[in-house]
Image (cartoon, rainbow, N blue to C red; front, side, top):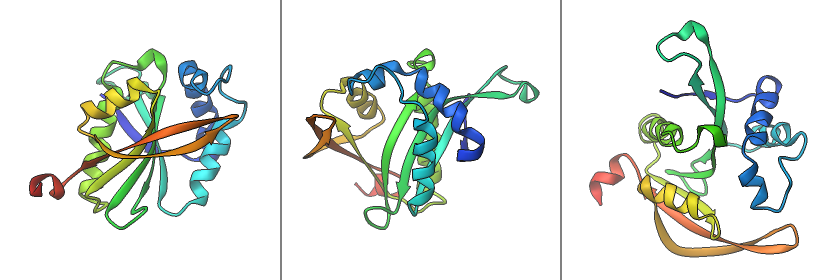
Length: 178
């Protein structure tokens, strides 16, 4: 169904900006009328500046079963491996353009990433934060097996403080040990 590719600012900024523009609900949560111009380029440049941080594009084939038909970028996985400590991945974002949401693409993309993280990347724990008001993201990550840790922190978003709820999930070999 889906595949993942590393995103490069020189090659993928426009396509990622299109994903951002097709996700107005995300920007509305932050009281923005839409994706800020050039946001994708800034985000992809920031990824390159942080050690261990990766941005993967979520691709959907234009014609399933026909690789010659190409694929379209429909989403983003942004994460940092072995941070804040060895063996942990911090997930910064899982985003799928609204026309492709609730069709299994994000879950399938996470499945591919989780398999790689547990195997080749040597990661045993995934952590992330979700804004307390983002109920659909909370439900999505709970369906993937993430659990609330009871930890939270506040961060400033524009003129207001936002509470971030910490979630985590054991992956790979750690799953069997628990």
